[in-house]
Image 1 (cartoon, helix red, strand yellow):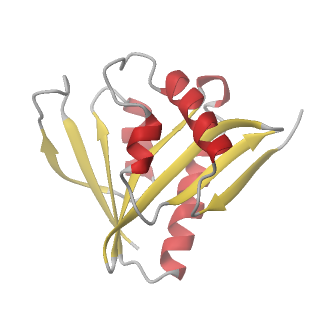
Image 2: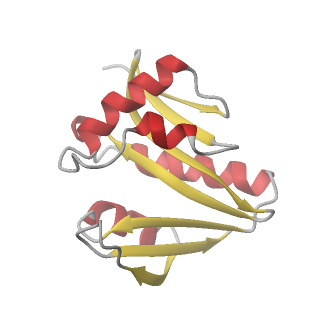
Length: 150
């Protein structure tokens, strides 16, 4: 069995973006209408990314960006279904929160859709509170917004 290596980066290179595109198809297979991760990434500034690799294969990610001077949005993440239930999502979240504290952030905000039960549970277990629910015409489920004080 090989070990998983989690790296932190602020600048994603083309190989990492290509790997994220492949991972997105595994993590969100039933969302064919969503824009590609490459387009999403190009529209964001000051990204902070945690990427989990087994050997040279990207198996998970946790990506976010600053909202205000003391608030951070944990925007995008997931783990390849073949590697779930091994604690990698929790570990990336913990590493992200440790780094955010070091950088002086006071609050982290995240969102998930109602069908993603595992993410709902993980957020609650990690000290997030549900602050509101949103609906959008282009999204077929409720979006749950979480906040956590750091």
